[in-house]
Image (cartoon, rainbow, N blue to C red):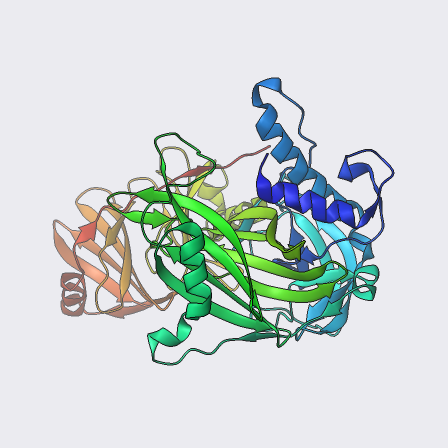
Length: 484
């Protein structure tokens, strides 16, 4: 059984009245543990779900995994069924503001089920979860979010909120280290040498929180994911006067690349963010978020019976490098604009796919097309509105000159009948189309041209076209338009 999940349920169960055997999802709730609001949606804060809403079904071939999966689901289900009881958002460590459960988001704007366990960097991409309105919070953004821990009145009635003071580190790197009085006993306990140690914060003017990691291979690992896999070791540390509490966190060790605990962590085990702290009936309770480049783990640290335990809630996949989503309503809006541009010809075109084309990274350009890529259009989306850039039709095909001096280009060109060849050039800067050039060549000689709708001389047109950079071959990843 997963140790952190086991402690999570022990913690939850200790605050519930025992009325339904050992299944926490069927107990009558008394004092409910804190909940994390890690997302925002439509100006509300959100508890983001970390696992499927469907109760896992037991499979004897995966009995051990089932226990962990069911424990995760049971804890999440506990929160879902009691969401309306969470009414206080912790702010400024010890203060609260009122919060109210509104609803839950389970489907995206296209009516499809949202995959749980993901934190998105873009507000346009919804996460599955419960939404809460926060009192006195007219508008939410990353700078204005007052806190992330929400609790029930019953929880606050039996606990004292504690202050959390980050330790300010000076230029001297040694100032960040945990003191020798902590490092030496831990080296003796585990028989390893500390390679890095960080003191992170002071809690309630009493407890010191930090982490340390050891150099080399952890040869006393009690559990092995793989008999051939070497382990590394880090410790979560809480110091209370002359008492030191530690919790071992086992990672991977590679003989060539060294230790790792999370993807892309660079071999460093980082301290968690202590989002709220309480002195409870059984002792210290810390709500933590352990962040890594691609993940975030939530849970509670507790000191019970002289031991430090980490009680994990869930693990999220963090997605920051995402494109803005294109929903069905966006497809319909682009189709409407495309048809309105030339109803006689475009109304019969069946648009079947779309792709982001990264012409100008300051903006967002979308190519929507028929299956053969013979008819379609390029759009610029800004502030939620679509602007038609240019259309692809018949023999007129797009090309993508390389960027130069902060300028970016799209060219649509092709045979225009007989000895004629037509060219449209769109220049982008800062996410906007700043120039539109069109020219007609006859027998390879420029015959007429215009810039931004005004006719210019052939000489000016030749000079303009000569300055155009060489075309590149971009990678176009098409997404099929689902008409269902």
